[in-house]
Length: 264
Image 1 (tube, one colour):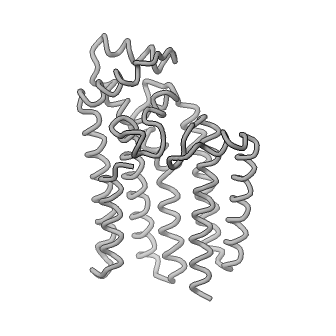
Image 2 (image 1 turned 60 degrees about the vertical axis):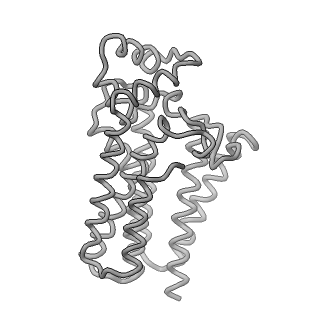
């Protein structure tokens, strides 16, 4: 029965994640998801939103079936925080003055919170003490931050063929991600005018993404973003220090490394 509860919690996390992706693709107007045409372009925006709603509902049904109020509390909170993060990102899109602190708040909410909740819910399901549960939550939160930072870097440093989505989507949508913010901070007058036109005033032309990529790579902003992702991956691994050095811990540490080194 304990194994069944763990499986149901794991499925709940997957359902929540998939629901957020379906909703995100509608909000962002994304063309690709995991290398395939996005669902809303095949079946329509309304259908995608409703399927996402269904997956959220099914996730909560599965949580209830585990009879763990603590796990339900953790994942319900995560669902709320994710939505808050997405709204905050929408309200700050095209904002060239977004601070790094607010950017980190956004990605902590919209991405890292689900990593943290999944790790914490797993700890609760395993019946570990509060100290270990907090350590696993810290692992998940830092892993999620590392993952999203690397993801934002891949939008400028990756290729559509390997990403499973269009490179440059964040740029075209005017998302103020860290590579963009760091490049803007390191810009001269000519570059600043480019960013103001392309992001601030939303006046983009076809060659603009190529120019943006050159500025971000040339300024060192891409490397700086990946360095910060590496720092968070190191924090994630450090959070595991209290656990035995066994295959499970090695797997979690390897996952943190992969979050930064991946190319898709």
